[in-house]
Image (cartoon, rainbow over all chains, first blue to last red):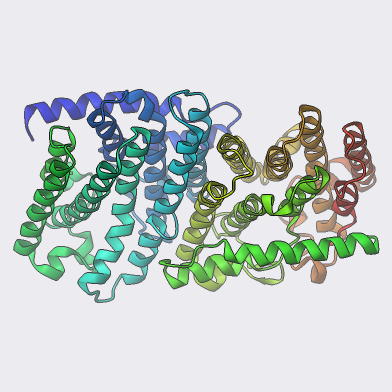
Length: 298
Length: 298
């Protein structure tokens, strides 16, 4: 990671986290529910989805403030999905980002409800917030919410998680594995890019480029995740290494071999950058963010 | 229940259920996830929330079709909340509406995801659907989604459920019990009425009356639920009777006594009708629907 990307990520993370907490409802919310939501939402993480929304607005020369509520909504959806995924009935994980998982701290019932509340807040927040902004048309907000609903739901992220659970212990084809990751990880990244494009009034060519870039870095992100689960450092990752192999999970290294997985990773990132170039977005932070996806250690 | 109300409910139930299934996404959704969502969504029930949306549009002399997507969204949210409430970590119920609960049929992981997907679909569906209708302004849709987010989330239904779980086994005051029910049951009924009002372009006076009516029948609904849990017929209810007492749950009959609970019920329904009358809505189906809340046997 270059020094400038490091500084960029740090600045943007502070900007995002400053807003995240203020956009969580606290008034009239039972204290334990609020604490549980806050615990997972503020537990760190890469903030990649919000980062992408802001990078798109920056690339389109629009004010970052315009994206903050949507960025926060995506992070809330990502966070709820992690809370539910970690539950005993799902992946049964005790650690997340080096800290005890939500249900380990607050109990299962509260963890389920905190996830439900974060998901609900994500949609409500976008609707509420953009009613107060005169620079975003109501129709854009409705399109944004339709996109979010599609990408986060049964046809998107939740569907990917379902296929992932059903695939455990089975031998999957590469196509099946790609289906899972396209939806489980990719869809919410695409929602970040396309949503940023909607808010930033991107042209049709730019929109297509943003969606294509999203598909490629989404897949690259997942391949890197699989690689880190084999070669990563558990202290840096904040979770156990080798858990995929223990669970006999289908992964890219398991299906393609480690070398081929890494080659594929490089190809995807190169293509993602090319796509940006064709839409005149090659000078934006989206380029170094593509590198970040494969250079990250956690 | 009068014959005409019976016919009214039957007609509207058919209308609602015909639309409900078609508004659930199936394409590109893993089969087990779709089946699990469909199982609970189509498991019957009173369809009270959709019924209220349609009754408001009818009262305001607007086409019922305008309300169907929002009505379906409310039923999806209600259904997801039941699926999650029934989970072993929550109420741990085996039966719902006389049938095995979702997790008993599909397993816990799928039940959690089916709930998440129904909740997500509710918001996405409203956004998607109203983009195609020229008789509803985009700004109205955004307001509708903001209302839904508030009523269904941490400040609303989820918050009520959290307070309910925390209150189990404790001795609650009447104010605490009313807080729980105001949010757990009342908020989604209010969302039905206020949302119907938004879609039907209700005047400010009419909106106020609809919200007030919602608050009153919401509370009445819960009191009747508590009464049925003592005096009801388990075959008609489709679930065990006496479970509240077994769990030492705070209920109206337990706190106020049975007679006082029934008096309160009658008062609330009378007031709800009065409020409608003041806004000129006394000739609508909302009046017999208020009676239905306390006359129902399940």
